Length: 79
Image (cartoon, rainbow, N blue to C red; front, top):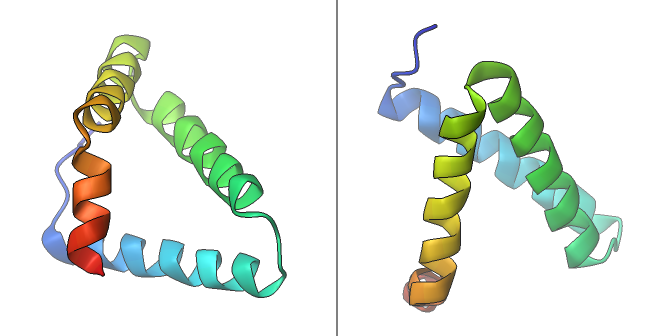
């Protein structure tokens, strides 16, 4: 299975996710519910397309980003 993606594909997928987030936000759903649903969906996609060890590696990278404060720093740059 091919895992290389183009910048255009990544941007298109990101735009679609942003639209879903806006739609769910307009329904006044709690942010934790929206985030949990998105994370669950992402994990389902990953588990269908990658071996378990690759999914674990992705999750470990995400955990490291949280622990290092990278996500908070990225959020500050967007504001």
